[in-house]
Amino acid sequence: MEVRFLVGDITQLEVDAIVNPANSEGEMGGGVAAAIKKSGGKKIEKEAMALAPIPLGHAVVTSAGKLKCEYVIHTPTMMVPVQRTSAEKILSAVTAALQVSNELGISKLAIPGMGSGTGRVPMQEATKAIADAIRRFSTLSHTISEIIFVDKNKEWVQAMENDWNYTTPAIENE
Image (cartoon, rainbow, N blue to C red; front, side, top):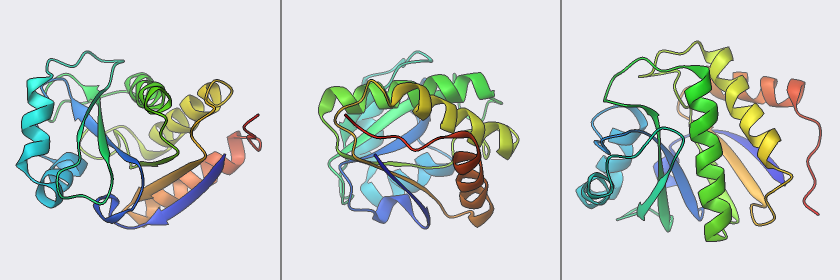
């Protein structure tokens, strides 16, 4: 599996799917979710809210509206909007997004900063949880060939890259 790190806008990527660090209500009012709704259209939020409540540790898929990807994978890091979250909830959310990606046959997946903005988890704890989830899941995934870690916050991208390189040995799909 190829892993890339990108400072940029997740809503502009041409990938199969992007991950939305959601809340259980499917409301897309802040952070990454608001950016996805702004670029992709309110249809995405309407579809997500129709699938709510989304339990922690689960993920749902919607269309991507006007985005350049095919799917948005909504995976809650918190129950209600703007709630403080935890590294454990981030790990659970990323794992759920990876499971859904694998089930859909996603090849190229973009993952933004999760939990360290609106969820107020310290950046290093959040990036470690994301890396841990991918490392644990990678032996089960045979469809994901590329993951792009992307965020507008260059410090987050650098922290994610540092944590990934420090904690994760090279991953090969079999």
